[in-house]
Length: 267
Ligand code: S5P
Image (cartoon, rainbow, N blue to C red; front, side, top):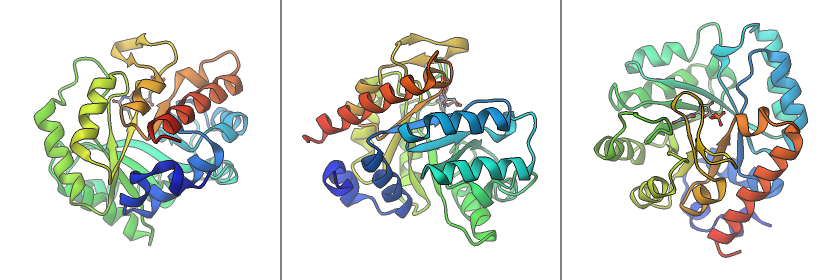
């Protein structure tokens, strides 16, 4: 199915080319899964991507949890992601002042040179988005920021007023492709979608086929509920990398998420 037909208003209203790239990949591969590849070594990361690559549309990393990082080995992961046509998303959750965030895009991990998408908190002020964009500009690249508007963890401090401020910042910025929403609660995702409107994406962690409480305050909702409520990408970690058959699990999340999108968009 053509991305345009599948995504409806999200396709026509989105301004950022990266959003369109994601939507095209999702339509072609029939999956809204962003894999949260929370592995501790580059080898494990590459193995995982090789195994589930056909069932996912984006790859989310935490480069700073990898024990054996080197730019050479990381290049292997980038190559693997490219082979599977995956957007590279570093979940760095930047939160410092703009200038420092710009410099944190460099450093040993040099996130600016390989990540297409990064996450950022709005807590320090709206200029964080400009700082991150300046980081990409330093290496003549363009990327997209997902601002954390909600979180899936219990007891988080991102209340409705805070969410509103995050949306105001995101709406005005060409560098913000969307928002992180709380996938564990379809009600919260629906409330976020109502505030965001059609022109930006919502990506949701806190999603698992086994709903309920996860480890250390994590909460899980069903992928279908999140997508029907307005999520455009389900961020799935342990539901896939912790499964007995990672491939079967990835295929299942792909099917659930894609069917839910078709249902939402009346396809
Ligand atoms: O509110 C949030 C935001 C994020 S980006 N809650 C989250 O869990 N995440 C990320 O999603 C988290 O950093 C992890 O990589 C992933 C969830 O993993 P899972 O194993 O619980 O599915």
